[in-house]
Image 1: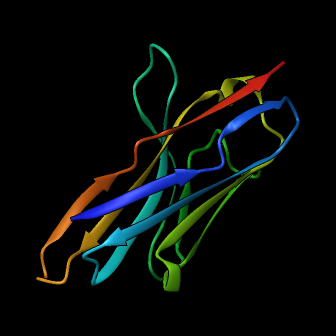
Image 2: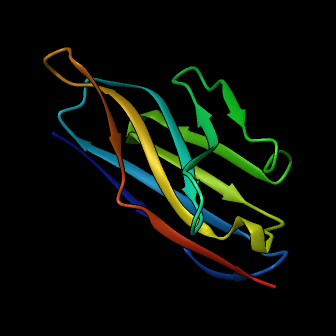
Amino acid sequence: QVQLVESGGGLVQAGGSLRLSCAASGSIRSINVMGWYRQAPGKQRELVAVITSGDSTNYADSVKGRFTISRDNAKNTVYLQMSSLKPEDTAVYYCHANVKDRAGYSYAYWGQGTQVTVSA
C-alpha cells in the first residue's frame, strides 16, 4: 500500500502565495508521474500540473507562469509553488502519483485533498 499525504493548503488573499507538499510513503519501488489536480465546488476535477521522474512538466493554461511544480525523488515528494493567486484558484487540491511498488506492479494513487481558498 502507498499513502499520499498533502500539506500546505489554507486561506490567502488574492495576489498571495502558497506552497503545497505531497509526500508518498509505503511500498514504493519508483514513482513515474506525480501531479496536482484540483476540484472547485460544482466543477469537475482538473489537471493543474504534472512532473515526470525526469523532471518534464506540464501545466494547465490557467496556471502557467504562476504555478511551479517540482519534486524531490529521494523524498518521494512533490511540491506546488503557487504565486499570484486568484479567487478562481479556490478549490480542493489533490496530489496524484503513478507508483510502481516493490512487487513491480503499477498503480495510481490519490491524496486526501487540501483546501486552498483565495479571497478577493
